[in-house]
Length: 114
Image (cartoon, rainbow, N blue to C red; front, side):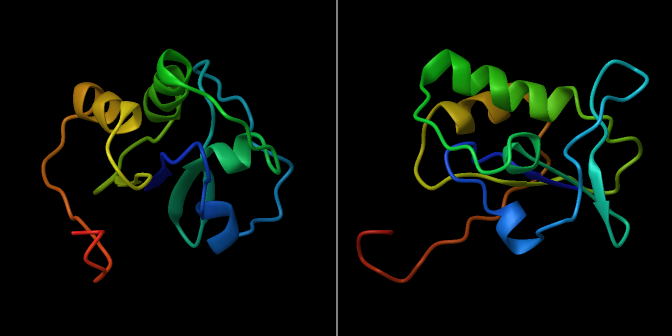
């Protein structure tokens, strides 16, 4: 599965603009992820398409926590979590909420990014 945890500027809907009527509620009380070619997807951009807002601290953490824990992922081999650049509340929330078995850091070659 892929979780787009960048609630400030979700990129998954741009990469995979799915023709969906939004995210639907699941029977267990959570939400069903969208599925594209067998890969389960979740992004705030699918939950609230076209909406961008300035949000901070506890609200950001709660939104990421909900995306991570209330999505009915089912059985997954892997869950790839796309994070926003930098460090902050989203990174801390994921580190505290998920069992992370590995990490891949992708950076750009500019001196400022290193």
